[in-house]
Image (cartoon, rainbow over all chains, first blue to last red; front, top):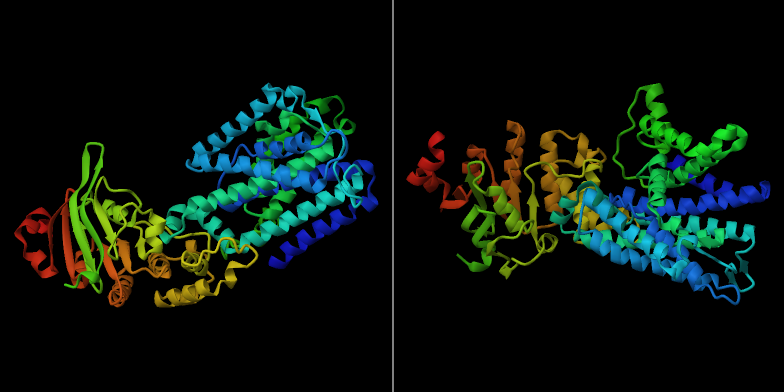
Length: 330
Length: 250
């Protein structure tokens, strides 16, 4: 099975790499947007699947990354990709450090609520103050460039850059998952009490995971702002925090590729139910169709889309593949 | 008695939960090369004592010394790294990991290096070597690749001890390691404890009286949070106070 997982991930990235050669402008735009969401979902997977911390305020880091990109862009010309990227990632990481330091003192439902509260706090700061243009949000007038090498105003360049960020983040998390740090996070997820009794100070581990995750969400926010050219408070709202949670649940928690699959499945379902060609008048009620589909898939696929092959195998052959522990992370 | 042979000492440990006194001025000393059993009825405060000694909960009063150092203010992970290992009454293994990974992760506690994210944990030679050694020592060498959750109850208890040993502790606090074990498994565990005590100080909380009196060098008897006797097994057996309070039903 191991080889298949790596093969699958390789094929996904290879497919994404050649995709623009076969698709039109709309396809490239949509795929860029989905890859940004996939990166966002990956960042949350490190917390939920990797460490067992259910964060319900992850949009805060995404939104702060996006707002930082727009607010720090110069008004008289395009900003530098390098500087804006680093700045937005750092801004998100800094907020994650503060939120993590406080919220990680709680557990379970309280942790969920505290992370939500911090995200709502950020939401109301941009919603109710002139800092970020209030409810209307603000526009990114000039998309950032990197000298003459990279101009993110060009759709294909942005596509390539987003793909590179996604692949690099995926590779980084895959390395992290098999490292001692990642194994310690897995231990914390399964049995934190035991980890402490064994000699691991679990708080710094969880905080480090939280900051890495927040920084990565900030990177996704940077890409989103560049892609969309505008930011508004919805990027920090709890709806988005919920959506990204649904993505990783849909894909299958506990696997990095689950976040990829979940983000693509979610976005494609959304496009499908929004399509007036298919649903006509009913398309404006797309939330209903999407919601029912998600409820059905969670009920029928408790291990997410990632678990579908194993589920089919069990059904057909009547064998359980639940052996060998969950030492796989990819 | 050479004081440097006292590896763990608790002095006047008191723990109150609101108005309830769970432990009342409990003192005990664990010596290298001995098994020190703590017996008492349910609610006597045995598990609370282990929790305080290991740093899981703080005492209301009193002090804990590990290897001659005052560790009362130390967190549990810090005490663990300094050589204090404990097992739990109920199994607290990592059920979804393999037996090997359970041991390896425990061994990793002394070789944490969290920043080396590029290197696979399976290449951490220090922890893999120890993991193999402790699995061998506790008779689990043939089931390294099995998911720990699928082990039998007795094997889980063995794994629990193996994980404890993987941190290379000097003091072992064992909370009912024999609970629910069959006769054969009990014998194997007692043989292992007998072997371990040569280079460790062991605190043993146990309900199996036959086992306790066979293996213990010192026995502390607790009733309602208070120590009523600490003595050799032979003397404890004949202690009239103990007979009335505890062994009367025996």
